[in-house]
Amino acid sequence: MMMKKRPFVLSRLSKLIISSSCSFSSVASGLNIALITGSTRTSGPPTVLGPRVNTFIQTTLEERGHTITHIDPKEFTLLQKPAFAYAHHGKAPQELQECQSILQQADAYVCVTPEYNHSPSPALMNVLNHFGSSTFSFKPSAIVTYSAGQWGGTRAGVALRTTLSELGALPVSAMIHIPKAQEVINRDGSIVVTSEANDEEERWQKYCSRTFSQLEWWAVAARNHREVVDPFDESPVFGKAPSQRNAP
Ligand SMILES: Cc1cc2nc3c(=O)[nH]c(=O)nc-3n(C[C@H](O)[C@H](O)[C@H](O)COP(=O)(O)O)c2cc1C
Image 1: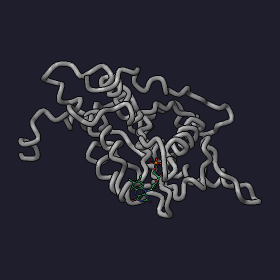
Image 2: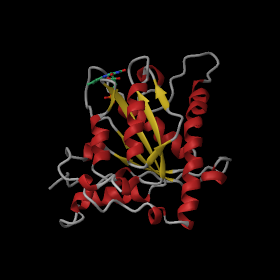
Image 3: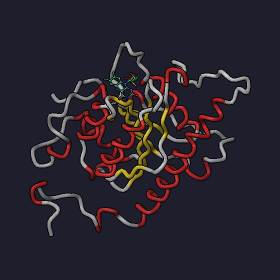
């Protein structure tokens, strides 16, 4: 069995919250967003930061009116056989099929990764590598990075752009970087308030809004156009082995 038997990620499915006071919801409400995270550590030192960052990002997206499904790398074994390798050799394991279905139904992807040795989390890469570009293609993605240090995982973010581009989940230009995440986000996912102005939450939401607004614009545009033109008509899914590709 490739993966653990526990019902896959669906237990973490979040409910759609559309606030009637959320003016944005009229523009891009109801996006299905797959939130793919990268933290698997369970104890420090250094202090584990992933869960608080994931909660902050998930809550922020929900408050913008979206349905979030969390894809947790802890649910995966190390890559043995990717989903696309089952196409001609029987069915993929149930859990893998369920995850693929979530990814296929998503309008957009948000990847949240810590920076490990200037790279994205290998656990996040492991999740992505289980699926081919036909699962992700013609949809936008957004990158969120964090670290305990002052650069907020920017190097991991830049590296992750290449992978998401190859998968066809085109990363929007803006990224969210959270330096010293232990000083910025409380364990419950709320923003730490230290200033007299008490405006940290507002400032972080404004910062996140730049990236998520881009994501929403592209996701709505792609979703609308998918209804008119099948993107795979002109750019079919790979039917050849990698050794035979990229030649006329
Ligand atoms: C294996 C490993 C490598 C790390 N490499 C970096 C790094 O390259 N840059 C950085 O800013 N922080 C680095 N850190 C510190 C992380 O930013 C910090 O531990 C953070 O909490 C990691 O996220 P996590 O708690 O979700 O695992 C590293 C931490 C670990 C465990």
